[in-house]
Length: 153
Image (tube, rainbow, N blue to C red):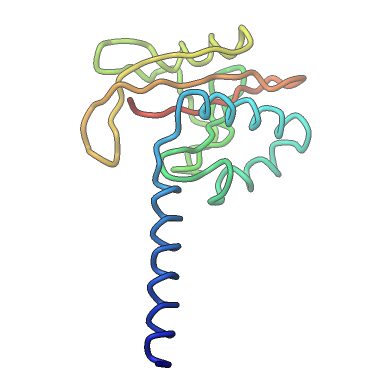
């Protein structure tokens, strides 16, 4: 009887863990991506770049699955880039997608206008293939910074 209780608890625990993993693996919607970008911009405005860098590079509300927050300055240089923090200071202005779209300039210009969506084709590291990507871009209130978050379609 004790064995059945232990087995039941183990099965329930496994089901809960599987459900949590599945929920975390769920692909975010465009509305969720926009909300994360807006929240990230507000976070930077309220707490500053140093606190944002900690929050954006640690697994949590701003970094999970394929989601992470990029931040560039008004000259198009990375301020925060979670996949490769060593790229801080590098320009995104020379980024061109497979179709010749100047996506770095597009992201910068969208952010300088305030906020909006931009689409381009980029290599998905999960599949190692070029895929359409849509990115929400938001200027940080009161700062010369731009936060953006994208998802593959």
